[in-house]
Amino acid sequence: MPDTFYAVAAILVSAAVTWALRALPFAALASLRASATVRFLSTRMPAGVMVILVVHCLRDLPVTQWRALAPLAALAVTVGLHLWRRNALLSILGGTAAHVALASTVFAH
Image (tube, rainbow, N blue to C red; front, side, top):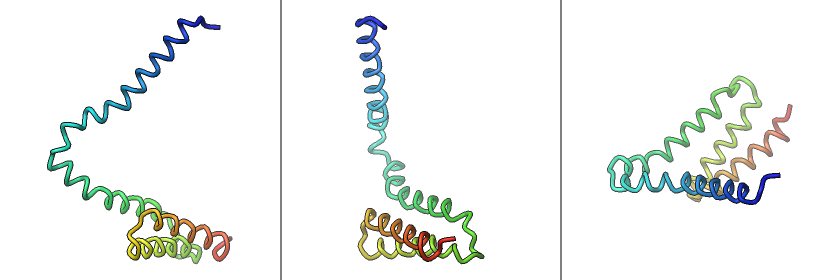
């Protein structure tokens, strides 16, 4: 069993490394906050990321089979909820619930 000094030193080193790794991004990005590029990306990236996620999730969808209707219907529910309420959490939860309900009941194998 390691002695007390070794254990305390290991804990202190681990804490210092963890703190530094968590603080480093904030320190590095502080100078970029006034950048026009960062402001542009902060307004455009959320929609771009969502488009990439949708394409990734639907890329292998067998559109010639009727079971493909469950994810497409869930996507329609998600988009409809978001356009109606403008609430990301409600849209994600509603779309997920619609997909689980449809895939496990109506479109079950």
